Image 1 (cartoon, rainbow, N blue to C red):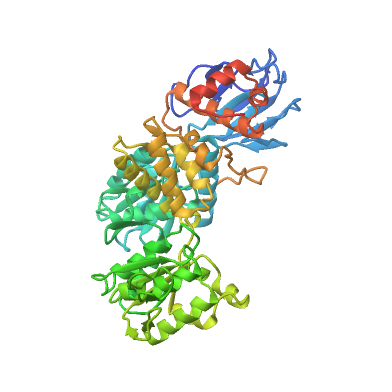
Image 2: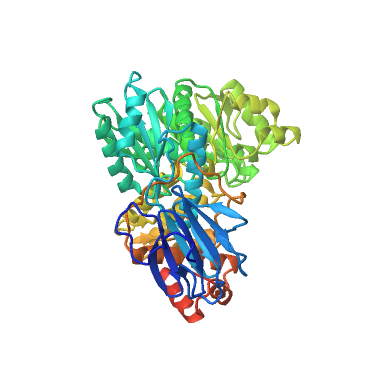
Length: 589
C-alpha cells in the first residue's frame, strides 16, 4: 500500500476537474474521488483504499489505475470476478465515463472529470458512429441521457479550422463532433437530455455567430426521439431544417402534417416523406395504384392521399374491405343489383363502382378475392363498364381504382390464387408502405400524438410518456403496426390514472418481457477522444434510485420474474426488494 500514489478520498470532489466513483455498497451510497495519478485497491480488507462492506466482495477484489488521465481496472483474482457493464473483466480494461463496475453485489459508476486524452474534438465519421453507438448502448442500458446535435452553418465558405477552434472553446470534454457535409456537422452529447442539449446548442451557435451568422441547429434525444444512430441523426438533421437562423429545434417537433379530408397524417420518416411525395405526383393522373404493406401499416391513409391530392377530391372516396364479405355478396356490393335479381333482393341497389363515379374506389385486401370475382373485376377495369346483377344494361363508370394488400401477389400468382392479368391492371403504380418498426423517426412522434388525441377524447389531462416507457415502445416490434400503436395509446389514456406513462403501464398490452441486447464484444471500442469533463452533478438520491431500479429490473428479467431469486442476485433482503418493487412500479411473478 505504501508504494502506491496518493489514495482517493471519500469526500465529494471539490472541483469538477476530478475523476470520481459513485459507490453503491449495501444500503449506502457515497462518492470516492480518484487520484490524479496512481492506483486504488478496492476490496473488503482493511488494507483496501476503497473499502466495501459487502461480504461477497473479496478482501482485495480489484485495482483501478489512473495514468495520463486514463482510467483502467483489473480484477485481482477475486472469487466472484469483476464486471464492467455486465461483461467480466479479463486482464485490464479501460473505462469510460458512465461505465458501471460490478463487484459481486456492490456497484461503482465512473465519472471522468477532466480531459483524459489530447485527442481532437472533431473525428472522422466512422469514429463518430462508433462513439454514438457506444453511448447509445450505455444510455439505453443504464437509463442515462444522451442527445445528438446537428448544426447547419448556412454557408459553404465557412473556415473549417476556425469553426473547429470556436467549438473547442465551448464544447465539453466528453463531446465529440464530426463533419457531415460541406456546411454541416454533428455533435454527440453524452449526459444531456433534450433541454440540456438545446441549451448547449445555443452556446455553440453563439460561438459560431461571427463565423456563420446563418447557422441553425437541431437536437434529438434518446429515447424520446429515437434509440439508434441513424434515427437520431435523421431527427436532429430534420429539426435543423425546420428552424430559423440562430435558433435550435427539437426532433420531436420535426414532422409534417398532411390534411386529407377530415383526417390528419403526421409524416416524419424520410421514406414516408418520399412515399407521400410520390403519391402526390401519381395522384394527378388516373393511373391505378396498388398499395402493399403489412396489416395496420396505413394503407388506407395512402389511398386517402391518392384521392384527396387528385382532381377527384370533390367526389367520393368509397372503400370496400374485400375480406369482410362472402363471395355471394361481393358481386352485389361491387356491381349492384336489380330488384328480384336473387332471393331477398327486394329493391334495386347501386353498386360501389357507381357510387364512386367521378371519385375513387379503394379495394382493401384485394388479395382475398376469389378467382371468379377477380375475372369480373378485371372486365370492369378494362371496359370501364359494369352490369348490375339481374340486368342486361351496361353502365359506364368513371372511377379511379386503388387496391391494397398485405399479401405477396406475385407469389399468389405463382400459386394460382391470383390472376396475373388483374395484377398488371391494378399495378399501374405500386406503393410499398414500410412497417412501423422500420419507421423509427415516426414512432415517438406518433405515440405522443395518439396519446394526446386519446386524452382529449377522454376529457382528461394530457399524459406524458417517460423516457423508460418511450424506450420500451421503441424496442417493441409492433406486429400490428400503426393500428396497434394507436390502440395501445387509447388504452393508456383510458386505464392509466397517473400523470406519466411508465413501462409497467404497458405490460398488459405489450407483455412484461423487456431486455436490451448487450454488446457482443468483451471490451467496447473507444473513440479517439475520451469523455473528459464531469457531467453536471444530479441529485444523488435520484441517481441512486435510477441505478437501483435499473438493477432490480435486470435482476427480475434474469430471474424470469422470480422475486426471491432476483433479490438474491443483487444481495437485497426480500422484504426490502418487494417494498421497492411497489415503489418503482415493477412487476414479477
